[in-house]
Amino acid sequence: MALTATLLGSCFKKVTTDTTLVVKTLIERESGGDDVAAQEVIAYAYYTGSDDWTVASYEDAVQGIITDSLGVERRTTPDVTAAPFEREGSEHNYVSMPLNQSPVMVVVAVPEVKMYAFTFRTLEAENLPQTFVTLIFHSWKSKEYTEGNKNKGSAWLVFPPAEPLEEEEGDTEGGQTSPSVD
Image 1 (cartoon, one colour):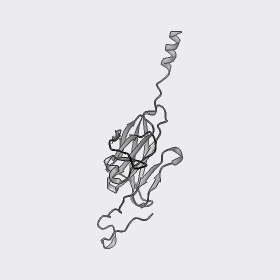
Image 2 (cartoon, helix red, strand yellow):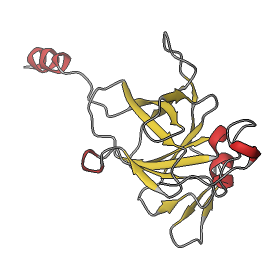
Image 3 (cartoon, one colour):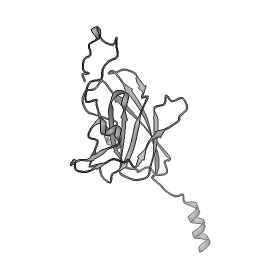
Image 4 (cartoon, rainbow, N blue to C red):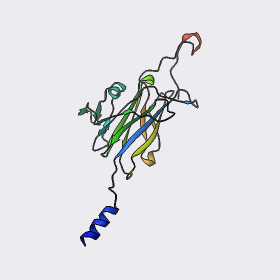
């Protein structure tokens, strides 16, 4: 009997929902334009226990600060901080972070367009060592929007810059810039 239990026990793998989240971050600068790799990405995660958390501003996003939805409690030290993820042929726009608890709030900020996004994920896939997601920042949008699929639990809430970005010299006639329009 003991031998049967030992043999059966060795047939089953340990089931885990731990995964390394790999985020590919792209920027679309104009409607219908090409997606280009973000040059700098700041990403981190908090094990929040619920989805009653938010990021109050771009400044908070780049500093790693989240606030509860009532605006009472702030957390300033992420549970996980992303590191660059090397992938052959990539343009330095992948970051990764190991995740081992649910729910988890993942925050991504892109300084070159002064935008940030966050999502809440529940780790459900079993024995999936890496989970790849793509997040596209549409820097031409002037209002908050959702990126991804809400029905599949992969929706990101994305926030535009508080102020319109300055266009580079020569991008507009007469050196004038104008705000982006959806």
